[in-house]
Image (cartoon, rainbow, N blue to C red; front, side):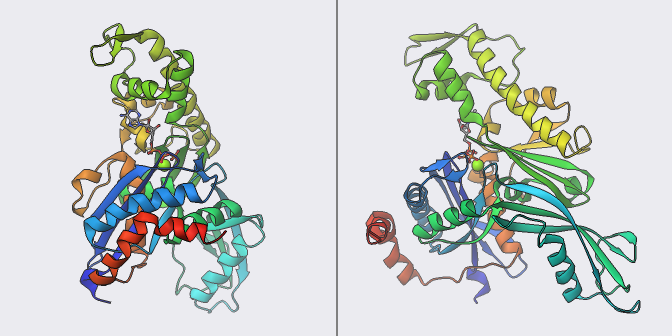
Length: 410
Ligand SMILES: Nc1ncnc2c1ncn2[C@@H]1O[C@H](COP(=O)(O)OP(=O)(O)OP(=O)(O)O)[C@@H](O)[C@H]1O
Ligand SMILES: [Mg+2]
């Protein structure tokens, strides 16, 4: 394949928004962003497809512009998966490898991984990733890479990431309906971590929190490896809904109040009234509004803290907590999060990117960027399609091609 033209795509299918990042990968493996876009999602509930046509149409619509920007035709992508059925499980496996002088090879590693996974993860779950945490040879632990070492008994400790199979299947079908093959499903927070964390942070201990619209996901890293993934089924939309209910206003206005007037430094003196409308004709009592927002934020970050405790990492993360996702755009949110989590908190911005990267250096683009980066790292390139065939496909793709495909099924 022509190295200059090979490209990767990250596709973040959220409940509120869908985002795509297209990047080329040069022969040194360096990634340059050539296309991106975001658009409203549909047919998703708490990170999971509730129907196929909603997300498929949203992906189709949004991808059209990202493709035109880069001149690439996306037929496959790394895709985000979310929802509270995404979990991690710590497992162990042990195999006999023969005589003491036997050198551990890849076949042994595959075999011990098989033992560590098979039967440990319920049959109704898809294994999304297996992260080897530690190996032991003849009882001697603390080995990161046993390849070429000798021993008679090989043990492995692993972190296995899984999600309910029907959710995985439906997500793959939804992207396929939009003509995009999901090469791999990666938890949205794990993909986001790839885009915002440094190796040093992962080595020392850090957590990424993806504060989305309807979910808040947590990924914990230590010794360079993913140690824990968990998803809480509450997100920033809950704040909007609370405001709409308590203030008896339409959700659009509640969203405007949340995004324009709320900041995470609740104790700072501000004007006592929040005024909206062209001439400030609608006014709301700031104290009342802030109380509603604070109560929900407190609940969300307390749930995050519970997960950190469950994973035994509460206040044990030297590099603190990194917030990503649209919810992290609330001004000064890190000030509030720090109080509840009693840990250092910062906002995660995708970095180290070439190309048209400026516009996606935002916390809500971390997942899509990370998905593209992971695809590049795992050498899952897409074959370039000639400009001619690419152009021929596009008009159909965004103007009825998908609908035709859907209706042809009935
Ligand atoms: N400036 C802002 N201040 C506060 N909240 C914001 C701001 N901008 C966006 N948000 C919120 O971010 C949320 C959308 O985030 P995001 O796009 O990450 O969600 P999603 O990926 O679609 O959802 P999920 O991950 O739960 O499936 C919405 O609730 C939106 O109100
Ligand atoms: Mg999301």
